[in-house]
Length: 170
Image 1 (cartoon, one colour):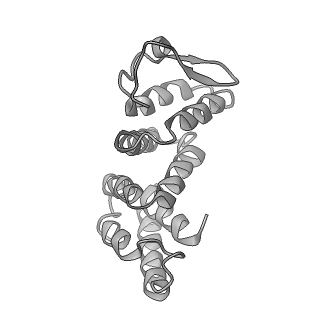
Image 2 (cartoon, rainbow, N blue to C red):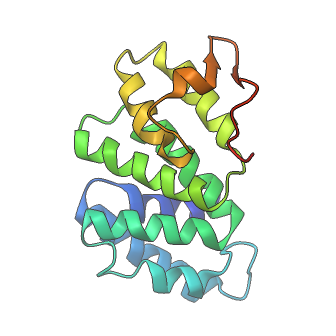
C-alpha cells in the first residue's frame, strides 16, 4: 500500500480527530510535492478536496469522506476496504465498528465488486472474534435482504456461497 493510500485511510478512518487531521495535512503536503507523479498520488487534488481539515474533524465527516474517496479510484477503495477489515472489525469502540460497517455498506452498495471476498474474510475472522456475527450482519447492509443471511447464504469455515434462487445482483 502506498503512502498516499495509507494517509487517506488514517485521515478518514482513525478514531482520533487530531490524528485524522494530521494525516490530512500530511496528504496535502504529499499532493503538493508529488502532484506531477500521478501514479504516486492518484487523483490527488480531487481526493484532497474531499478530505480537508474540516471534513475529517468529525468522525461522521471522516467516514463520509472515506466513502467518497473510495469512489474516486480503485486503489483507494481497496486500501479503505482492507483497512476497515483489518482494523475496524476488532475495534474496541462500538461506534467505530458501526461507522466502519456503514462505510463498507455504502462502498459496496455503489459497486458490488469484491463483496463476496469481503464476506468470506469476515466469516473467517469470526473464528478469532466470537462477537463478529452481529458486525457481519450490520456490514451486510450492502446486500439486499441483510437481516436474513442464513436464508440466502451458506456459510462454513471454508467458503461462502449463495444459495440458488436468491438474487443479489452480483
